[in-house]
Length: 498
Image (tube, rainbow, N blue to C red):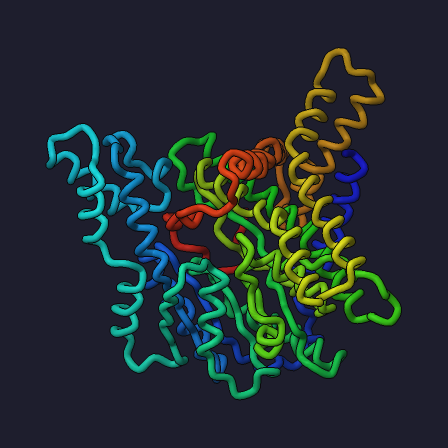
């Protein structure tokens, strides 16, 4: 644990030395003209549509030829019926964000009022259905908002996906209807509805594209805009706010420690196929801030729809085809979970990606993609990453017990304390130093303790995912495991993070 954490801290420092560095005067390369086809899949996100349009439309006006596509889904109507069935029997005390994160505050208030009007102690399926049907779907909101836009420029589209697939199927449906003039010069850019890429981020992306074209003679196939995570203090209690803040910081450190270095190694190896005959690492893409050259997107068949999630599985396919995935040397900031229940659900959902690896190997080996040895190597790497996540909390708890235990021998106590220092105090101070925000002793203690709490909780989601699979026999759920994102408006700059 000490060795792994010390190496992780070394990777954090190396990443911070490379990313988010200001460009030197006179050293800026000419920006590559970018055409971005931004695709935003939405589900139960009525409250976010107006803000998303207000952000993306002006942003894309500076990129001639770019488009914005909002993709709604018929799955929302089916999930609304399922939610109504779940609400049957709910009391007034149950109608909270924590119990029903898929519902908006307005919907919860309307359900409470309807319950009071019935004079009953609990909701019925019929009452819940009637109340929820009175609210517009996300598709209704998108249609209404687009109708209000005066002569929109850039081109803004609304695609309504009629199937029962999830995010990947929505994105693929949008790309199928996308008209491109030069597929090798244009990008599909996948963002979440609460993503807020800034002009600075896109300018740095354009510079990076110019740099890669100068080196490789063509635009890069895939560019990942890696993210830092930040909360906005929406929880009502101090301990929940602190816990979610610590979990967000721990996830940010994972991005700097693992995600970005892994992508860099993969991209370097993929560009040297003759000197590295084996598997070029294992790319681990993320489903927001993902730029895919349009011809490459169609060449690999789009995002995988046969797995529970799509982003890590997409990276698996890119690895088999030796497609480089470049990590942009400039991070953005995205909202993190604000409530404990949302945090655990998110962690459980994300861990599903690691459970998808065997299905990826089976499907793509049968289709003739990759050698048997490549799949074996990919499964080994995936299993290691999944086990490392599963063991984070137990290993951290063991180190904490040994460091504080009165009977622990001094050498063991020192090693355990080193492991904890390397995963909390050292990276917290490194983050602050990189942001030019020196911490006081008290601030260091608070942030380190929050990060430690986040690590102690990190394995709960994965364990829940495994337990639910063992009990139910399936990893698919009737409801897409996501909240409707009731957080405050996102920050307007990429450099504001906790």
